Image 1 (cartoon, helix red, strand yellow):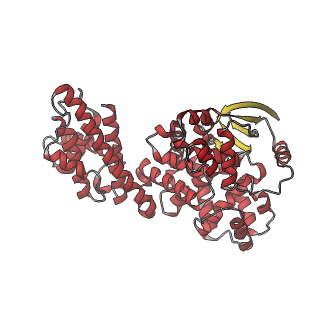
Image 2: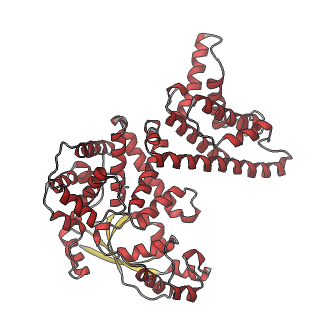
Image 3: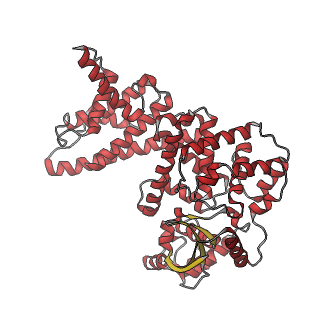
Length: 495
């Protein structure tokens, strides 16, 4: 075992919090608010606090071996979820992090904590270190659960020894880590999302299921999801660095399998997970400057109590929503889960509003330089802007939506005359999609018509995954609308 003492500013730790796993099983104790407030007050006054112990999982990720409660309190304060004590409020003239005077918030950001980084350690050495640090702390959640005999406990061990756990995630299986994840997963599959997922709930679940059949629907569904996950990741998925993320991905796979989505989608599922967590790391590091609030919301659900039912629901709904628009095969998820559909509609409203605001800003700048709007506010354009946030679930409503985009981006720019040459791909895509939806193009030479049909179908397929609107389910039409608006925002941002 090798240990190296480092000092790091807490704002840098906060910006990279997605790379630090803080397992719920580490301690049963949950700090009261008063204890958290005392820690924050100590930091604000520049007083020394005990050092932290991080185990290096790989070059860019760590597990907090000791100091989880302190780290959680710091993150909660950064997120404005933890208020200062009444005494501290008077002392610093603020209640939350955002209200701190600039000089005090700068000092808080720059406050350095000491971290012992541990590497080249085996499981026995890590367990001995943990026990010494805790000075005889009782068994953790996973170790106590392991003492409850029965069929369910044995099945959880079987799940935790599957190839996905053993070879596809970067987490070390220290102190029954995989078993603890599997037990949480099985409880959620059997009973649904609970208000809390701590030791009392897990203990009751194992005791009530001492007799359990592997032929049960819960067992079969979990096993099918494990097979799907194993196929999704041909190699170790290095972005799955925390237990909360592994559990969320397991549950997402269960959603897919349970609702009849083709198992041949496993590769795209793996691609989505890699993409999601890569983007998460980027947006979390941006912090308040990020425009992708879903990623910040996702990370916050881990930093401030990952075991609560609300946090689990938040993560699963965000993953489901993002997956549904990642590839058309996953669009049916929207129709099955009400939360996912309502969140998707909210995103649609936000994208439509963003599109309008960007157009108004662009027109103001363009007219100041050229004496006219880039996108002329004709009656059709004005009407089109009001229709962008109307959810499309039929060919009729989608046709009206495409008309709106056509009037705004093609006709509104003078048939692209006020845009750069050659005409932008996005605007040509809109023109082609409208042609295939609104016009009969079966005229002229047969070979020419076929080529034109293929070209137009390719434009629609680029956003929908299908060659025609008739092949799309209502959910697929809605996700196609979302993708087109995302493309519209990007097009406007690049102008």
